[in-house]
Image (cartoon, rainbow, N blue to C red; front, side):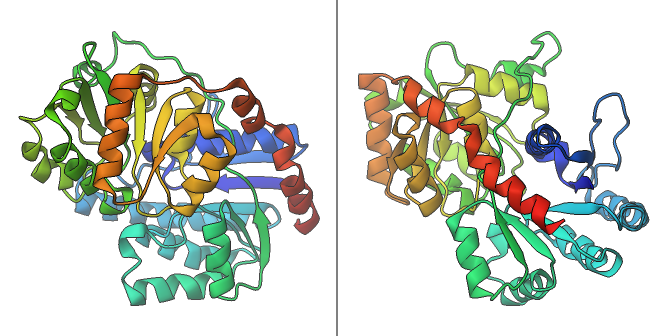
Length: 363
């Protein structure tokens, strides 16, 4: 049976790397698979337009253009397995409704059940709970997600799988990269990268507060890079608080693939001080580039750190002193490389075997 992976976010948030990894695993396990998203696959054209480009009016217009394309695609693939990548965003709310109407056995690959910035909105969360209860099968990636499914008494098929391992080309051409990206890396400091959406739930305020509490002698050795979409203007409003304290640079927009490659290849540390998360593609990218991480002790990261201790430093969520202490350790003790045994364990291929057996059974 053919499996269609539909991803509305795609290239605008690095999801294309996940899609490609999933697609590759499907093909290597004997499945016929296709990716339908906003980026080219092979020599083909993007299946859909990027609905996240432009102002609010343009985004709404792009979504309206997407709806008939999505409905036609779902109907054409009613006899195929249709896997929709879900993030708990308002766009997902619309498209999952249509998926439920037009496909007999819809499957979701859920990266966040409810957008972390909307978890306090009771009406918003209730709508998603209602939608999920009607889904045929659901792919999830963490214990946090499993607890959510238990809480809403999800009665459909559950398929757990670890985050697929990235395998995209790490290449980039510095002659073609934007100058702001090239200049964001400092050759005179330890580079610390905060990458992705600049959201409270991602711990962005925690970073600013920790910098303000760190000793000047430590800060003079560090350079912070904030790279990603700043939709809530948190970085724009707070960057002035640290400009005189520490070297820093900002690229406050969606980051393209080669730009991501350059940033991860040239940074020293990847900072993920999250308040909560169900899975993280940024963590996977950091491992792929063999970059040491600073993680908070939320369950997903804590479990990861226990499995692969050489991959990261771990600090108590919200503990400014603890994060500042890690900055100090990095400066004075250096950054230790990944241990080979952790790398080998991380790339153990048997971790996906059960998932593909279960997937084949429900199709």
